[in-house]
Amino acid sequence: MSTVAAPPPRTAESDGDQCVVLRDIGWEGYSAVLKLRGDRPVPRMVYLDGSVLLMSPSYPHEHSKERLGRFVTEVVRWLKIPCNPSGSTTFRRRARRGGAEGDMSYYLAHEALIRGKKRIDLRVDPPPDLVIEVVETHPADAAIEVFRRLRVPEVWICGRDELTILILQGGRFVRSDRSAAFPFLTADEIFAWVRRPETGSENQWLDDLYHWVLEVLIPRVRQPEGGA
Amino acid sequence: MSQIAERVAPPITESDGDQCVVLRGIGWEGYRGILKLRGERNVPRMVYLDGSLILMSPSFPHEHFKKRLGIFVEEIVVGLEIPCTPSGSTTLRRRAKRGGVEGDETYYLANEAKIRGKKRINLRIDPPPDLAIEVVWTHDAEAAIEVYRRIRVPEVWICGPNELTILQLNASGRYVSAERSLAFPILTAAEIHSWIIREQENTDTDWIKALRRWVLEVLVPRHRELSKENPQS
Image (cartoon, rainbow over all chains, first blue to last red; front, side, top):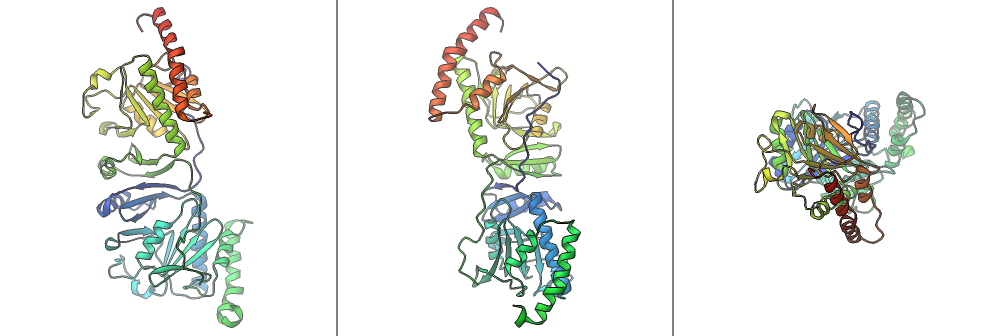
């Protein structure tokens, strides 16, 4: 016997997103796990055809998510686009055997239809107009399939190397260089803002974004011929 | 618009580490509910401690070392003719202790006769396993160790990439690290670890053959020597 304290070998915690799957648990099982999680935002969950994927996001994941959220907030604010953010609301439909929580989601074109509602029921309410998924270490295939089944018109997938815009056409997602919700924005442009180096504090990033929206984006939207 | 995307997600490398997700604020009934949902499947592995439920999907290296540790113990007990009932990753839980755990491997040794023939282990009346083995690959095993402590598992092996730590329960109910195994006093932690991480030029079949030879040629004679010196043990 040596020392009294128990020294389990210490290993570095993984810095990626953490993902665990519960298989063949059915819709009732999914509902039960959602209920157990309660109002906590983690783990995030995706349900598809009987399997529940549980995910704990990493810091880089959440950092990108926050920037994307602020980006959309600045754009809709200064361009006076009606918007109702629905965050990581659980969107699910039993009949579609799917449920998912985007990193961010927004009602834009359909904002008026859900204004003032306390609860979204996809059997009667529209899905959000835009969902944003950050893909840090795990693919978002299951979540994308759920958003397709729920008829979300536009999904942004923000990976490490690019941002992909998917637009629903004839029930399938097709890639697009431009946003449908914000036709004056390209995928590359959005991605450049997300990946912009941290020169100062995040307040500096916000200031730069604010000036870009005022000085570049607003003139572009006013003169779409010249801007695009 | 470009081409129709078949596989739309940008290709990302899956992490090769163990995957771990925690559900917080889960009561005992919630833990039982999730155990029931998982059913007979062995993943995700679960540890419950004081309201938090850790779900873990092991990686290939984790499972590889787990299998080696299992084969190691099984070769030893056969070679040394030690009575043993393996209990694998059986869920060991006690509501009163607010804990539940599934080891990578667990074994009944000294208490083997007390559970022989049982179809179900109930820790309110049955003893816990005499040895639990935890592989620590990318996440620490602190919650699992605390559960083992509460349910009074006498010995735990924590096998990491760099060392194997043997923990033994002392008289005041705490784990202390030990150089030698309690269940197998002829084995040191360093010796076990060197076998587990041993590089194999060919396949693990050759590893098992080499292990078997070592048990017969080194361990069995050592065991006999020790028994002669110390006839009680």
